[in-house]
Image 1: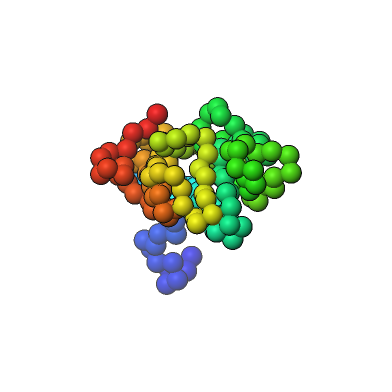
Image 2: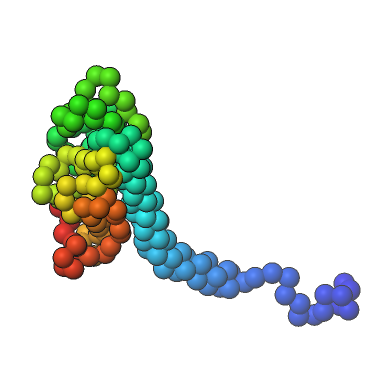
Length: 185
């Protein structure tokens, strides 16, 4: 035996106790990190979904200005026709309403659409008129100030609003348009 190389008391590995302690610490760190990662993922998903809504609202407004006519964004379960049931989480579509009857008729082109939101998020639209669609008129304006409210399973505390102004512009907020709290269904 070459004592000079290994020495009489050299440690060539971990003891069982050391290994158990390291595994327990790693497990504890994972348990502490999972809820934080879950919250980060949900926040990121919410941000992405609201950004998509914002961009579709701005696209709709831009098309109304470009076409000098009515362009409508409506909730849609199949991304081909508008629906009056359910919420906006089922998806939406944007179309040119050439005859201004607030109905997507044959021959009126679908300009774009968005598929359903993932993960059980809800998206509700509160408006003075119909909650099924938003009409952008030729000057890029809507009829009234309205609010989309996005919720996930975390409830009111994590709800966000997309506040739509009569001017046609939209902004994101963690409060209702009147400054109060947001309410999830």
